[in-house]
Image (cartoon, rainbow, N blue to C red):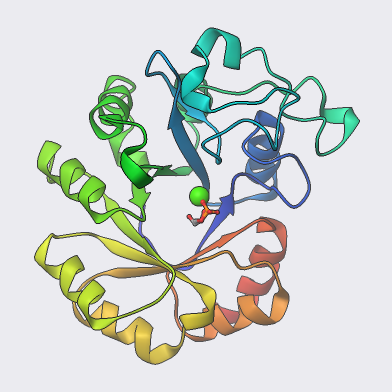
Length: 245
Ligand code: G3P
Ligand code: CA
């Protein structure tokens, strides 16, 4: 897939449905998103689980860290009713569930590996192996705020696509992308403008922007020639994108 003005659904279509659930992923797909962004943490038995926070407090009725619970138990938790009771049948997904669902669909998967503070040891190898087993490497972009995680993924296989997540742009990040052959950068939307985009394009890297949920911001990103918008509202971004083609 060419990375050009892509609309990526942040945690699925999470403006409308509970984040990181099958319901949110299905809606994003129906709305015509080019891809889905999601977050991965490891369970106690080192199974990759689809959840943003390191703990389960916000999105389930239970408490504790993801890595204190077995994957079998995590899979039983309701992660929908915090958003709306009508989603009470949504259950926490494993990466396996997600890959099986995405296989055969024309959909990019942006897998964000959460590795802050030595959380989730060896997650790079575990997730990479699973993607390979499903034959989906071409469909995946890995991202992380932790550059060491991206370096490990590139060491596993230089063909693996990786993007550095950052809250702000700086020359050193640009140099890092070049030096370590990262494929792109996912930048917070406040820092995006045409000059920044051009800097990345000049060195052959793509520029994604997160998390863009307001029409005016979407227009600004497309005007700045960004390659990817990560949004909770893929339907709105697709509507705005029409103005720029
Ligand atoms: O990938 C963009 C965005 O998801 C990064 O921040 O906290 O929403 O995972 P966060
Ligand atoms: Ca994320």
